[in-house]
Figure 1 (cartoon, rainbow, N blue to C red):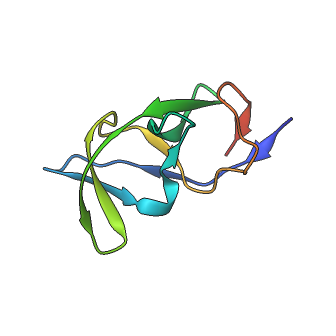
Figure 2: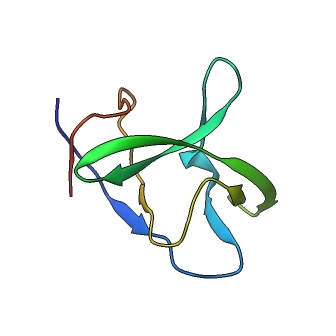
Amino acid sequence: MLCEVRLQELLPQSEILIPLGLVHADGDGIQYVFLAEKGVAKRRRVLLGKLVENQVVVEKGLSPGDLLILNPAIDLLDGMPVTF
């Protein structure tokens, strides 16, 4: 299955903020987001900090330059091909 995604490149700054709606949690409560790496979706665990309006600070798990998938399909899985 292929899906088309929009990406946001994370830029160097003191804090990484992402939209809260992009954070998912699995059955064990582990929070994660999806990144695009080498043409496939990669599930990345994140540790979240404080809320800033409708965004959240990512304390661990993301780095500047990561390509965050902004509109993941509801059935997107780790390792699925993505195009952008």
